[in-house]
Length: 87
Image 1 (cartoon, helix red, strand yellow):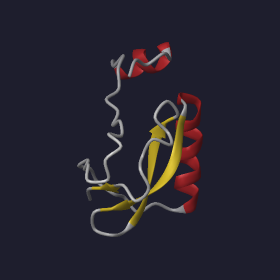
Image 2 (cartoon, helix red, strand yellow):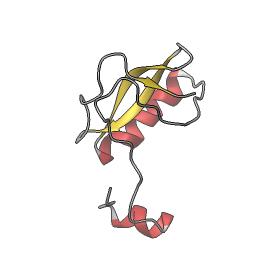
Image 3 (cartoon, rainbow, N blue to C red):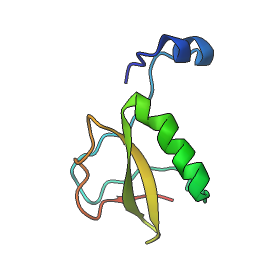
Image 4 (cartoon, one colour):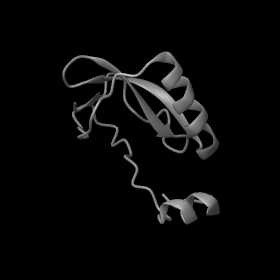
């Protein structure tokens, strides 16, 4: 995904982000790391992600645990019910 924020590009040196896009298949997996965060940290992450058009959605990990996942609004709502993510 192309990054439109020139300040971010200048500070990070990256003009594109790799994003996961749902295949619509419940058996799809994505590798990653789940972190335990406080409510305050989650609220801060929401504030950070919102201007870049990311929304938080709850997913069930392959382990069976629930987790929050940020998805770009262009792909929000495409994940099938019960889609599992690795971690």
